[in-house]
Length: 459
Ligand SMILES: [Zn+2]
Image (cartoon, rainbow, N blue to C red; front, side, top):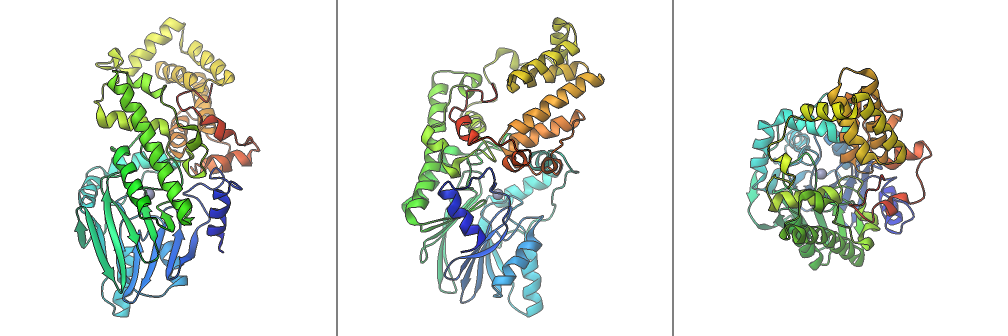
């Protein structure tokens, strides 16, 4: 058994955890996963299936790692690429085809084709329209603004698109492609019935589903859950996820799919019940709870996205942008609010001092509000800025999800704070690895923290 499957086994049994092995992190490499099938674990995963006519490759690579993936795949299987499938249009999944095209041309083989859901075309158009914005938000999300924003401007458009489902046969191997809205509106999941191999794309990522992302377009929790239930009904033997570790064995695969569906269903049901009673977004965010059993599952930890963010996206899908707080309907500028609060407090320095007290008490949520007002009211005041920066750096280190850490770290940097931790400096936002380096990782603290989502885990 290779390192990836060994770790997958240890994670399932609770002998290790995703706080030490983030779904996007190492080990990277290619391992056999079934007869004639390989799993390449990278930042995003790639699944390779051999057929008599050449390879089928699901998600050939990202725009930053497709060369490594190509080399890793070529070490284990030399066959030409016949068909590439993009599970969705995110940039960590839709690159790598040009390498195979070049290789095919140099060997005189026919050009490989690409299949994807039809909505991927609109996504690529939107990416061209919003390239600057996407560079900015991804720089925050993944690197805490460690580097200059970058975003690709060339995408491999599919040769074949489909609407609802597509069944094909390549070199004697049957495969079924199904569309579902979930993380994106252009998602495809793929099932190989002969070996019962399920490629979920990002509909499963060995973590809380990315259904809440604070900086990105709408996600679809309810339809996502239905897709996971449909996958489970096929009784797959192997789950090859879009990120993170594979799951082997029919019972385990069904459990993981159904638990993930149950989490999304529970968040949706709780949110809608409260919305139907006329609750405000604020009331909903602090009332919805994660079912305790699910919060302990190794594959449902909030290391990338968070349930709290998913609730916001459900509210956004069914409601408008008004959050129920009357002053938010037509608000004063943030700076004017900050100046008024600072005036009442007796100065921005008083706000900053109170923020530090709250930090010391462990109430980081409230400390951050005061830090915002203090910084906005006196952006040129070095002492205030440093205090605000310290508070946001503490917040970064207290968080568990890539998304919260990335956003808070970019704010801390804006306030001239730099992380001491080397992994954070690189924007490598993996909590346990950074915490473990400092010797700060408590015994299974994260499990306790998660039992209530609305209850403030930072005090
Ligand atoms: Zn992805």
